[in-house]
Image (cartoon, rainbow, N blue to C red; front, side, top):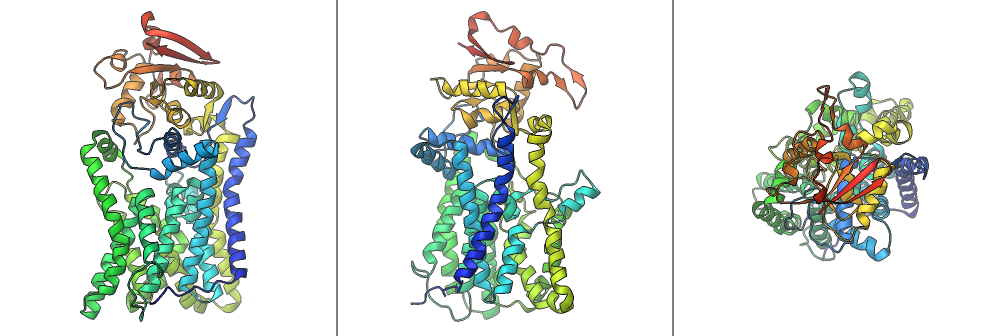
Length: 555
């Protein structure tokens, strides 16, 4: 029986990879250490534990909290309406169970797993590079370019501050940015790299073994299941590339590619039951269907992708052109098809277009290294090669510094911007959230401003009227109701019997009072606060005050 060829990686290579990977992951921890050090006990604000994309980070913590409470089915905790749970986000629910067993906080296990999955990602990427190249130089080139490579988003930002390239907005498209953002992005990239490593070997000439436990077949199946659980869209580009690969093999050989079909099935078959289940949930669970309809992440304009990949794309062009012209079976065919299917998918009529960018850097940097080895090193004079390579690395680094530093400015430099971005909350709100978490009655509906409501399900077992643009269903309606309440425009709807939920707690503090002013339209609402001030006395069971924040407990 044929087994996968053992990739020859020396101990010295692994030391180099592990040291460099450790340094990169440590860099993602430095801003957090700085933010925590700046947030002393007497500060007027509280750092909420997320620097990159705090809006989604808060929802991940809410999922971990659900697992901590014993749940294995996911509920939308930013949606006040009671609804059936679903088998989504099992990864974060599992982390919640683990946090409870280990007696550690949700935020701690989140970042511990983020660090672990990032290290695993970097190691897996080097494994992929070592699968492709025998020589040390291209292996290290691939690792460095994909590990720290970014685009020219920093340059576009200098030219037009309103245009943000994808290297500043889509963390899943770049491994280093992904490692800074959450645990499941780097874990997904690692899975894609390992799956691709297997296919590059088993699709080579002369390899004819059927998938088995010993030769990578089981590994592909398990990694497919992992992706179906944590990042289903990541399966689409590579799965689509395998479809195209089978068609190409049939066209070129005029023989049905049985061997390739068996191996491709190792990726497809485990994912099919998950796809059927997800479609069934969106069909029969009304709240989850509403969530799916409004969970739209479209791709930005094409030029933002071009700037986002920047010099990596420029360097890769000769490799891509060569792959089209020669269309060689050993590696290039599959990687070229992956790249083409992935790029087309970014603009297919699909709710989650930008999510397909995850893993796209793998074939892109593959062709960049191919171009460096087969084209650029011959075009650039030997005496200039080292300097040109260093210049390339210098130009692909600045965006990484920006994505690390920009959120930190909102914590240590300008707390007002941090409050607006959801990075911080006033300390009085933090005290109020702790009080809500301590209440014996769980799953109660809390009415608060959107920024505050974002974090309540993350740190308590309560739900909110409106707190997230995707995970509050229906989004626009609930947001309008919250704003109308605090502006004094509609004091009836949220407390009426017509809604499928009952508000238990109402928070009033500086962020709620700020809703009385519509800065975009320069409007001040004169009746702001009237809804809370005119609450019937027989409805108020208790008033709890934490500094500038008051909690009204309703019967």
